[in-house]
Image (cartoon, rainbow, N blue to C red; front, top):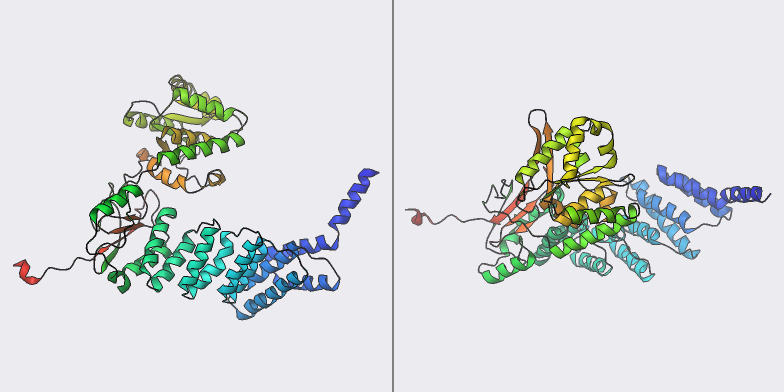
Length: 501
C-alpha cells in the first residue's frame, strides 16, 4: 500500500502545473521557440501557476537568444519581453542566479547598453554570486565595440579582481580597442597577456596585431636608445622570449607572414627564436596534481603501485603511448609499428635505455599479443623493465602522462590531450609541456612510421632583445603544413646615395 502511495505521489508531482510548464519551456528552449514560450508564460500567469527561477531563466535565455537575431522584429521582441520578464521576476521576489544575470546582461548588450550590462555583473557579485567569464562578455564586448576603452579596462579589472581569467576572444577585443584609441602601453600589455595565456593566436587576432604594427601610432612609439643590460635582465627573469621593457627601436614597422626553419630561424628577418624553459617547480606541482586526480579516479592503490614501479625502473628518456602508436593509420593493432618506434628511440637515447611502453593489460594478454613473435617481444621489454601493463578498468592516459612528466622526458603520442581528462588538469601547463616533450608521428607504407621531434624553439609569441616580434598563428598547425607566423620588425631605412659610392 505504501509503495503504491509513493508512486502516486511521484506521478502527482510530475503532473503538477509547475513541472508541466517547466518541461514545456525546456522544449521551447531546445527548439528556440520564444513565441510559444511566451504564450505558455502568459497562460501560466492567468492560471496562477507559481514560477520558479528555472522558469524565468528559460524565458530569459530564449529572449536573449532572440535579441541577437538579425531581423529587427525578432530582436525587438526578445529585448522588450526579456526586460518585462526580468522586472516581473524582481517584483515577485524570485531570487536570481548567475544564469539570470547573464541573460539580462546579454539583453542589455543587445540594447547596446554596456553600462547596464556591467551594472548587472556588479549586482551579481554584490549578491554573493561569483560572476563567470560569460557574465562579463556583454559588457566587455559592448564597450569595446563602442570604442569606450577606459570602461572596457574597468570591466577587465573587475574580472581580475573576481579571479576570472580572460581568454583569447576577450584579450583580442581589448587589444583592438587599445589599438583604435592608440593606447600603446595597453597594446603592449595585451600582447604580453596573449603571450602568457594564449600563445598561438587565431586569424582574427593576428589581423588585429598586423593592423597595429602597420599603423602610424605604432611607428610613433619608440625607444631609440635603451638599456641593454636591463633588457637582458628582463629576458633572464622572464625565462626567455620576452623582456617587457617596451617598444624598442624607431620608425615604421615591416610586417610579413612567414615560417620558421627547423632550428627556429625566421625566414623573413633571420632571427632565431628561443626555447623558453618550464619552471621545474611548476612541473613538480603539475605531477602532484596529476597524481591526486589519477588516484581518485583509478581503482584503489593501482596508481600508487605504478608510481612505486616507476621509482624502481625509471627514470626513462622516453615514454611511448603504446596503443596510439600501434593503431596509427591501422585498423589492426600493429606490434611491428610499435617495435619500430621503440627501436628508433633506443638508438637516439642518450642513456641507451629502452623507452617505457605503456599498454593496457588486454593488449598484452590477448589478440595479436598471443602470436609467438609478439609474445617474445613483450617478454623482452618486460625483462628490461620497459613495459608496464595498466590494469583492467584503468585509463592509460593517466599513466603515460605521469611517467613522461615525472621523468621529464619525451613522450611519443599523437594524442592532442584535449579530452575531459586533460581539461580536469587545466589547460595552462599541458600546451607548454607538449611543445617541448611530445614526439608526434606520421605513417605510410613507403616510409613506415616517421617520428617528428619537438621543435628546438617555443611556439609562443616572442619579443626579442632587438625589439622584433614573432607571433605564431594556428594556421598550419599540423604535421604536414608549416605554421604561419607574423614577423614585425622596424623597417630599415635605405642609406643615403653618397654612402653607396
